[in-house]
Image 1 (spheres, each protein chain N blue to C red):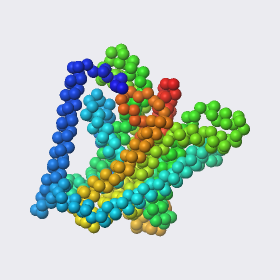
Image 2 (tube, rainbow over the protein chains, first blue to last red):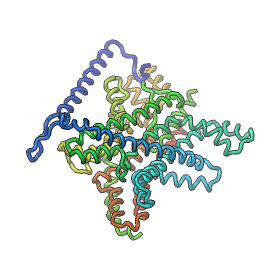
Image 3 (cartoon, chains in turn red, green):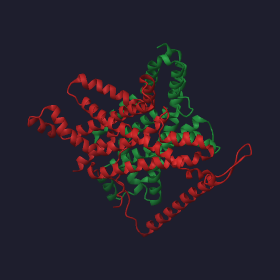
Length: 306
Length: 215
């Protein structure tokens, strides 16, 4: 499908845009190649010592060592372990928060709102440091606790937005057939809201996975520390770039596959909004800290459309 | 409490650096994000591919890794203007795809019919964007953009782990000196962050409500 923003081009403008496209591609590729070549050149530092270029074999031979891969593997597993544990707790906390914020009693609603604003407005890193120093939990649980509370607050807001966006008839029907308010929420409203918000929740879990790297700063031995700190210190500075690229590749592989999953689920269950541009990835901003804001718009938009 | 009052100058210095990072990286990321967003919706396919690849790559890289690159590896490439500048560069690059996505989602949020109507009365691509789509999109873009800025405010704390003396760095130094008063110190630092983030959040919420009524 072509975009509605511009005409389907005629032969002239098609030729022109193909020309610009080709030139743009050439410029981009040449720029990239130039960067690669420049990085590959040997360098003379200020004291006259010559360092080999980044792609020199002497910077990469370390990957023949099985120990390197073992260390990276353990690091990646440690990252995944923290992310998995934190994700479970974040979901639980998110459910609690969403129910607290929607509670009929102001005695529950108001404190929950205050707590939620507090957690959402504070850097995760500061929370990790706080938990580490105050509760002396060790770096793993400090990271898990901070990540679950922070992401739980955001997932809670997403779930609340999802429940609010349901037609009122859902709740009324539940109450009318004699379910208690809590049962209505659990058995009628919550499953629908969860399904609706699943893309946002998974996007938030990608953020959580990325943020496990913050635990590096409070001393947890995860992928970043294993690759860039321990290995680079052990094998020396000349391997730092190589380790950086490998760690980056591992992170990208983990995050992109989770993002891809999120996008597939979004296509299946997400709100179908009409979109002006050609690619119809869901307008989800996983790091905005308040993803429902964007989604609530496309939702109201979708309901206008159909 | 005295631990907080005694070290207030340190906190204020940290707060100043946090705000500095926030402003520099915020402006930089807005400019970069605008360019990326424009490339992303442009008719030229190679720009679209590049912008998409850039967005996906940077968005899926942990901020810690980006700042690690800036703080440790750029100096190895003999580019070292100082840790504050390096952290500002890292935060700019990291935040720009989020700005781009917020802008794009705003454009996508405008109903297709608007663009179709503009096209059918004969407006060009540029006219459609400037007279019809953008005026509507900008309103919708403001709340998610503010949310990006809020996230950036919190993200500046990571720079504190890479030799920049901002609020998180101040918290680390002061808690090292005063291990007996950890809770008040950390609450004070949290309060500094909340002074920035909560008002921004409230503004975003209000604008969002206003926009919702308008539509």
